[in-house]
Amino acid sequence: MSMFPFCPLRQAYCDMTVDGQGWTLIARFSNKDSKYWMQNDGSWWYDKTGAAGDTTDPSSNTDMISPAFWLVSGRELKITRSDDPQHTALLQTTDDCVGGQSFRSKITSYGNFRHGKVWASSKCRGRCTIQYGGQYRTTSGFSQASCNGNIQSAKRIGFWCDWSSGDGAVMMIGGGGSNCARADHGIGITEDDAASFNDYYEQDFGNSAYSITNGYSLNLWIR
Image 1 (cartoon, rainbow, N blue to C red):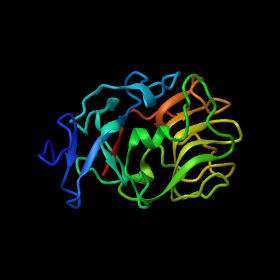
Image 2: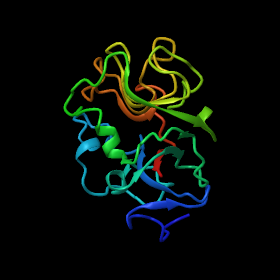
Image 3: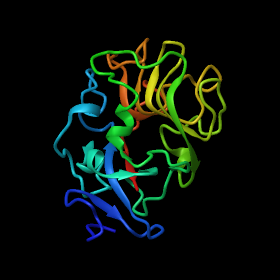
């Protein structure tokens, strides 16, 4: 459960202990350190070409991007907590979510949302089916895991989601819409009135852009 010969990159952490198929850690989202993922220009999602942060320690509570974010292709994603040494999936996709792409290719295929460009209006631009596990009920960002809304239903992760030209999320976890706390819950959340990166109230992850959890971070994996 560290650096293995099976790892596709030297600057990556691979976990081969869960089911023998192997997961590669590609990114980490933390509210404790400086605002990286949710910079107002949104540039990190698109432009980072070198590793940043501790790419080989999944327990670190700091932002991280690994070269695996743009170099390793896969089919499925999972999200875990930095304070869980077993890397238990809080959510895992079940429907070939990534489609053999890198995660950067996946997340940028929906459009270029740098510099305040609005990404949606009362919808998600994409979504995948997921299953929940571990401590998801008590994890920040998962507050709508049992809610079915008009934008998205419960067992989904949505990409570039917006509620009524209001708040939004790059990755919205669970239901969203008027009955499910709008859209600013998950990873990469913003309170901007047009779902962009211009607003002061932006967080790397959480149940809302106004609610800050900094005791742990969220790890993103691909396989």
